[in-house]
Image (cartoon, rainbow, N blue to C red; front, side, top):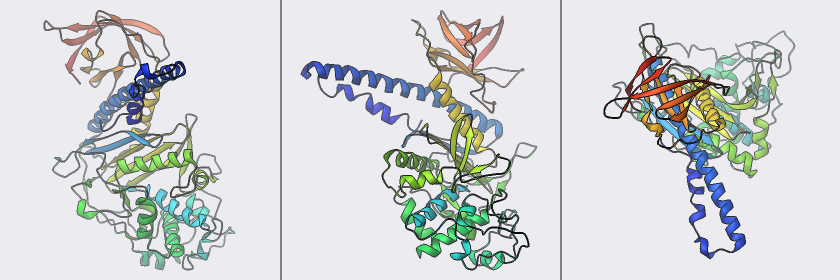
Length: 498
């Protein structure tokens, strides 16, 4: 693990700074409160450590089952990265290990940085969100459309509701070369492109729209877009491994190489590196999950402090509220940020998918939690992000079992045979007991049944609803090592430890 609740570890030692004998009665009460708080923080740190250990095992299992070469992931609590890790390898020879600092194309997560840049101009009074885009970009006029429509605005572009075509009219998502257009080509082509829909009537995701937002930033700031974003967002936030472009010189080294979708024979084709060129504001950034976690932490720090840092806190709130909801009420969007409800929790962020890479950044502002995932293959990073968040939530809500004298939970942790009925599974410590963890499960926290220690290698099965079930027995060999688990008169061999 890269980091586990560093803030909690710091708080846990505060009560030992001043000798207890030097304190008054009031100070002794304060000391007791400090110890209580420290105990609480230590318990949170321990819970998070168990959740993240389970997440690591599940992610690596999923990576192997899905044959994903490399995955990097990070978790943020408040403005601090509390866990980050890399899995698999990043080069063609499959020798370089992935880390939290591995760089990936983050594709459409780029839109968040572009949106922040535009809102900086809005704060300065240089743009109006509901003014026509053509007011800032005179060349950005689509072909005549007989349908009545309100103007194409920056708000419409940021919320994907402007009726714009999804793409500039070039085949840049077509391999093997992925010929992204230059800025000049985009400008020359736009006049021949008609709107797909009248503005503000239909949600239509549009890379062209966010490209126009980036062009607007350049036009009103008077600086090249890449220079502006670097100087006014990336540098102030310390995002040293984030760029408005692809670092070709690092490809195959710190930057992971790309792989395609899974073939029927279990292989993935190699994907050549691409140049996002004129589409950079919409889909051309690269970053590490360590940096995406910092970005997520910044949003939560800004919201909590209320003090201006890159943006005003009120501007961020404006970006993260719903500005457009589709007529079927299925899709909602803020200013650059996706905004949706997941099991009653408001989640903001964005996903990214470019040739050879996919990524996801999910932030729950009220819960002050964020998850970043990136991979160098065409798979579903959102499923990993949701799985990580679900494990953290499940462990946080788990009521710990009482300790049983003589029971060392690490004795039982390991990989157990599931054949021929299922994939091999893992048993790991969890809230004073154990849980079964299926590495091939898309939703690792679903039906998370627990094992409550009874003593003497015996455990009671407790369902996810708290129902008490049968008793299972772990068997030991002559050396005293656990080598199997017996349930319903049948045994599963322990294949190896963790």
